Amino acid sequence: MSETIISADLVASRNAARRPDLERDYASLGERLDRRGIAIDAIRDKVEKFAVAIPSWGVGTGGTRFARFPGPGEPRDIFDKIEDCAVIAQLTRATPTVSLHIPWDKADPNRLKQAASRFGLGFDAMNSNTFSDARDQKLSYKFGSLSHADAATRLQAVEHNLECIEIGKTLGSKALTVWIGDGSNFPGQVNFAKVFERYLDAMRDIYAGLPDDWRLFTEHKMYEPAFYSTVVQDWGTNYIIARELGDKAFCLVDLGHHAPNVNIEMIVSRLIQFGKLGGFHFNDSKYGDDDLDAGSIDPYRLFLVFNELVDAELSGAKGFNPAHMLDQSHNVTDPIESLMLSAVEVQRAYAQALLVDRKALEGFQDANDALMATQTLKTAYRTDVEPILAMARLRTGGAIDPVAAYREAGYRAKVAAERPVVASGGGGIV
Image (tube, helix red, strand yellow):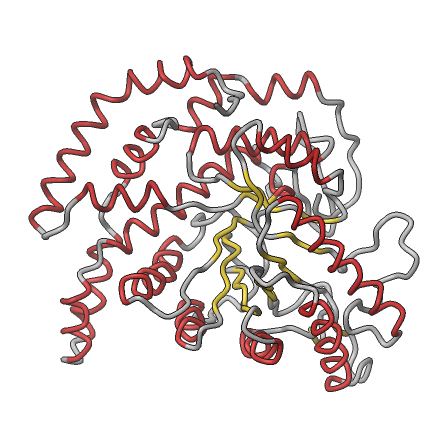
């Protein structure tokens, strides 16, 4: 049996106090959904099975380019991070896997596997880092990594990614995510075609090192840290990369890596249609790559993304198997609380999308009835599915109210007393 960090008795006590109200709310919602021809238990069962991975770096306090203000009880190493992730998994029952970032999380793989297994956690995609320089790194990535003009620097970046694969094989991971900050800050600084060809050549070497049952996710981003041009700047370039590399290569969509008015849900549809959607990094944004809590700014867009995902799920789209992960930076909140609520928000969007009357929607689309088509979506979106989400947590051993249980347990105060205070420093992520 897996260990738990938050007292099981505390969770059970809080659930017992809330259960009568939840059961009434669930029954009431079930009656209303039944009138729409929807079985609430079927939706609940799907929600129970839906999971999203936690990024190891997400449980630390983030920062901006200007400053970082450490929070109390920050994890000192990957083993502290695993314990924080275990708390999220225990209370939400929605986050059974952790995604590691190498070299930040580098440790003996067998020890990592043992630490995670204590809490019943597994490992999601491995993440390489060639967008910053590691301690004792021989060659710098200041002017690029996989697309660098220097062959030795490119080789170093390739070997780092191959090392990530080897670590992941021991951990039981089945995917590698590659994001690079390569690009330029001035017109004429690089030759666009040569840079992209060098990148493709380096990625082919990484792809060749993938085990047969692994997938390779490449991630696009419009800008930052390169502000004039970025090598993998949009979904079109990302699709070209996946197509050029082969059947195990897919596109990863980070919701914050697009211009504010870009139609992300249509990008998702295109990638599904052509079999190249690998998965998601869920977050939210207002101005750029803000890495805000999922659903905190535009929950309707999150719902529209899941509308496309559910449509593909129900229609049996070929090769449809997207990976789901949160990717957020928490500057002013307790990271554990933000990640718990974000996991719930992702589940909420999934549940709402399952409520869409797809037969009616298709009819309105074929009849060019724009008003009723969009109202069909809004009917699902406006449905309060909280009783479904809470019931799913209750049935799987989680907390009806995860944040309330977490706060009553005093976990943050406990780890703050055990973990040394981190001195305030410069900007950047953890």
